[in-house]
Image 1 (cartoon, rainbow, N blue to C red):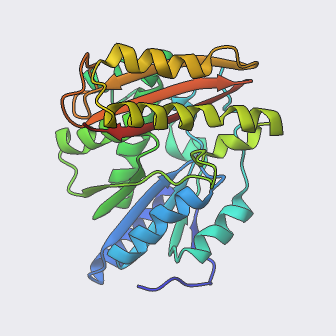
Image 2 (image 1 turned 60 degrees about the horizontal axis):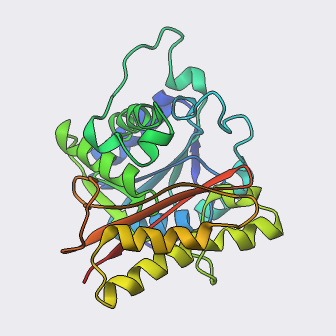
Length: 288
């Protein structure tokens, strides 16, 4: 289970993916799945390396899923670079890449969706109606198609992680759900495919997300337990910055994602903001 510099096998239809899975499973191999939308970066590579260390075979899905984009969002403009993605996958030791088309994933009369409930109602769920319906539907399909023993997701997408872990549990997918730490740039900015959209000035402005999370962590460490006080201090960092619009700053219970009024134990601090036209998210766990 060592990384290879050879190009991964490119699978472009559901049938070829299923055939590959059946062949590997028949040989007694375990499979790790890393679902992505492509334009891969070091954050994705960290998931692949973790999958490589824990499974006999690793498959990465690269699919920009139209169901999880709203009508005014960036589906058409979402960055794509299959050649670069395949190079990164090769360097991380990936065995196969599932890169397919919309008509493969969704029949013309497709009408069956996976709709999450309470965990998807606030945070990004409130800002992006229907987003998690699209995420859950495509990931359920990928779980069915790839039959992974383990599936790997990054903590940066904290609500997605919570929603999909619940999906895997509630719908009895026989897999281990693995959450990996957020990977950051040296200055703290969380790695994201959407960082490509940022101008140099916007890139500097975007650092406020991480700085606000670091402030929350420090306040809690110094004994502050009032969530409203912490939110107020964080919000002050965002005010007056040109081209910056806050979406949400929330302190929530890590299990239920319900807002908390006081910090009594491990708490998730989650933020989202528009920097120019680019929506960025980040989060950090804090505890007294």
